[in-house]
Image (cartoon, rainbow, N blue to C red; front, side, top):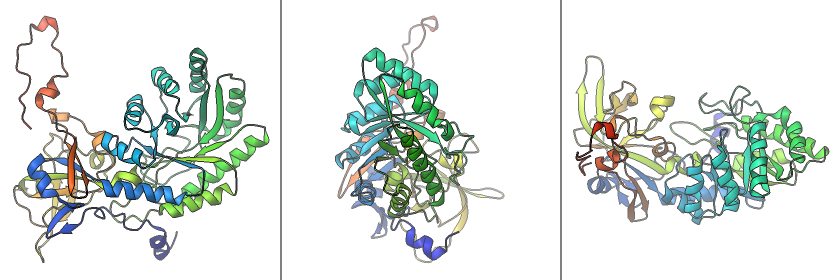
Length: 448
């Protein structure tokens, strides 16, 4: 294990949950805009993103690989809100997509197809056809049947497809078991030992140019050691394939670099880049990277309002108007998110343990247990931190709850970039079958 001093030196500076959201005059701000003002005008709950934080994190990442032939492909699965993706497109980012919807979003946001990588273990025929039609940079193949399907589609469309083979290096990323992707028991990629045979198979396919290796071992990785083991195995594979006369022009090293939710000390992107350089050892290849959470995770908050405080026999409950449908990570992963009052508590305020819970009809609808929290009153605002990644993209309408709106701040300005729908919108997705009679009902009122 590294010493704590060494860990602090290598850890990403200034990337904590509130680094982009300072208190000013006793009130939490997003850049220059008070969150209380947005809450008054937009209503709660809502997501709020800082443009400056998103741009700063992307520039940090790009700077770490300056001088290398590297394409930084933002992973839309972290946050695919169009305004977020367009902000990154303006910075020159590429995109890593895992569905047709994400591909369409990336293109609509202005990301050039030649900077898009399509990943994912279960791409459908329609998704692969769309990727071929768009002429994207690379399809990351994750099985032999997928290789055969891509070859057949490319032949039908008379296209030449550029592809990489995603390998599973059997490396434990030492992260949550539900977000580790590089162990042999995980569904992703092909066993690394099968790569030579599949490269040989691809060499006999007229319309597939298999010229890259891809790897991704997990998400929220907070140590360099798993990366170094995976990188070493992939680079060794590249040398072995070249020795067999195979073309290896690109290595896609994936993403997964962690952020601070609480007291983690993940490697800085500079330390991560140093591990890449060390592993390559001068190997002449172009590179691709797929950061997601690192770029947007701590650039977003979920702002919620206290509905009630309830004293149970054994617990203090603070019930808020956001629910697990707005932020699933605590329920799904037992994930920790810092929770702070939007109005700074008075000096010397006594912190008391509380369970911070939502209104969804599930015991699992909880954001924190035994969290030390200053006294709150009905109507007070709380900010749930680190909600820029895997919050809105995992949201649902469970309990027929309306999705929270999304707000982006840029300096002293803000805009609602994804409005809250109405109940009419929600029910408008449904159709009444003829045998139930004519639908003459008023499907929803335009209320929050």
